[in-house]
Length: 201
Image (cartoon, rainbow, N blue to C red; front, side):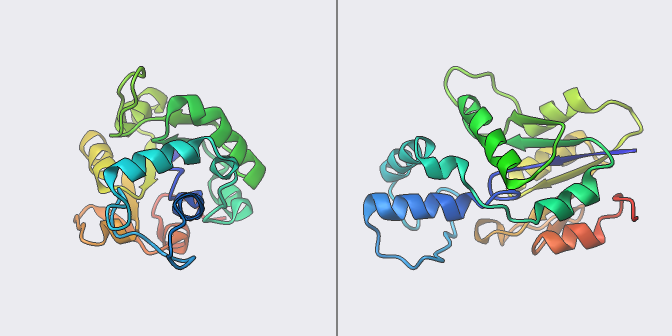
């Protein structure tokens, strides 16, 4: 038996596309529609103050809960749905219900969704993605599949679960990361076609 854990924003849903569209309009930025930042914090485009201002505006915008899927939900559900599927995203916890609505409206099926990661929000307990997996993992021998786009989260899960199958979804900001035990996915087809623990049907 296996259990799968997926990041949401930037892995299942196109966070950057939605965020960039929102801040492009908000700040009246002269950038192409397909602009992709090479910085996790968008420092090649915005100041720190602008990022915080734009992030707050985005959280309260309709675009936040209308992010488009980065993998076909029907294909995803068929591939992973035979075993528990959990989503772990690093957004403010009080926004989680809106994100779950976004996921369901897009067509994703899942057992649970949680907020965790290395970005901490005031008034909420600090927990890593490995902490969440530890709480949800049901059996000692259960195999784990984990997919994320941030190297820190992948390393965190790798440290706690050295036998897990871990995939880093390629993004411009993580191009320089390499690890012998963390597999890099160019896109979703790499995970869907090359995972060693997903049962074939």
